[in-house]
Amino acid sequence: MAAREAAVVPAREEGVSGVQGTPKPAPCKDLPELRLALIGSLRGDRGILASGIEKSLPWEWAAESGGKLLIPVRDTLTAELLKKEYPLIRQILGELWDKPLDIEVVVSPDSAGDGDKEPELPPQVAMVQRMFRGTVVKISSMESKDAN
Figure 1 (cartoon, rainbow, N blue to C red):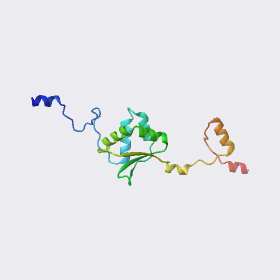
Figure 2: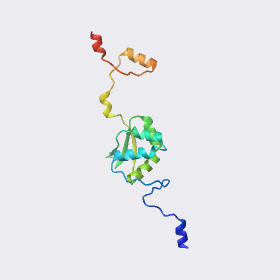
Figure 3: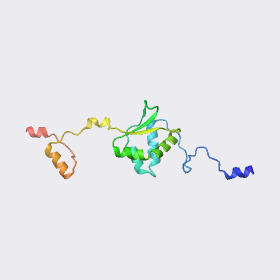
Figure 4: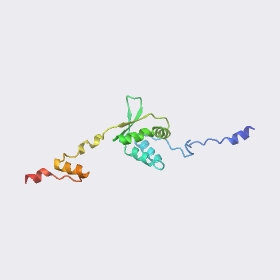
């Protein structure tokens, strides 16, 4: 009878994830690799969520919070999307990192983009931009043309 019970309960294969029998990936070694693996695992079924994670800034460990993984994003829309899907992200990250991770999504401006700030538009150009809801493609040097 014991042999019959053993046949009824399928043996759990080593190296197989509990999620729909998909092969369990090897644990990631660093945060960039973990980020790319998460994007890859979400891309098929959850494309918008994968896109939101793809738009995130470089991940880092929060020193003061006891090893919490910080996922910084540029805008609140992306932050809300990631916070809404927190349980799924945490589950997949736990499988990829090979241990449960505590994560926090934070909105932070891109510090690398501070040097590329757009120059101040003349009031006439700003008015036309607002009226027609347009964008400025190229700003040429107005001062040098006005001086001539």
